[in-house]
Length: 303
Image (cartoon, rainbow, N blue to C red; front, side, top):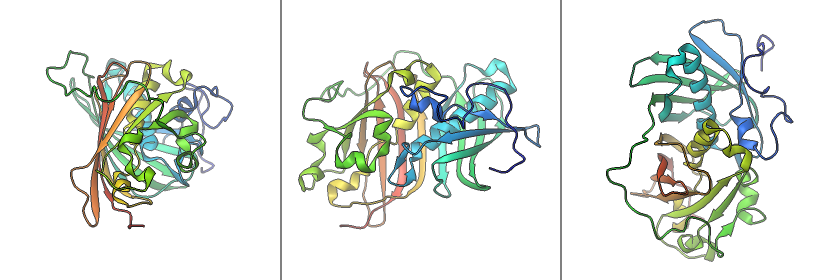
């Protein structure tokens, strides 16, 4: 980061201190931000740190960047008006302009609209002077009412069964380093590619934050947003392996998750010759919908 950035004493643990957050709360460190002085009073600036465990291969995990940007947007919105403390980032539209390296990142925050029901906040994730992720957030009130209608997913156990594939110690874990920051399992019954077979472009996973990352309701909320980008690209079940660059991703936050396992269901409407879409639905331990995402990505070339 440039030398003119000054860390203030405002709020939380210093984001660039690797020992500042307990090892049982690794995601808390991602969303722990330090306020920076800003030349423009209407613009918020924060310094954050994304550890190398929040990567897939060498690249920082997209959902982690969206969730950390949401933390910056929330912090600046609440600082601008304490009356908005009850609002949450219910929608995020993200464009990935580049791939940041693990380490220090800066968040530049600008409020576009303040209203009683809806607020709009834009965040740029910056590293070494380059804007690498741009996210437009819609803030509103989370849904705390009983749903009028919700599909049931009773065929997916609340917790991973005995035959689920744990990422830790597996070939998946060597690529998906996020499995070092949470418990992560893949549903074997939907993962045809594991047996060298082809099947429907769909996958199911279970993800459980470490205990320390469930204590703070805001951290749990950001973790749920992050988990909505946790599935491998579903074209793997069609024999297409490799990096699938995201063209655009939209993330929805519906409610704060209950403690326990999150269930992630990933499906696709179409896998084309060049692009595919992927929807991810996140259920908490009670079966409630807590987060969703839809992204358009480029199809990996067939192996």
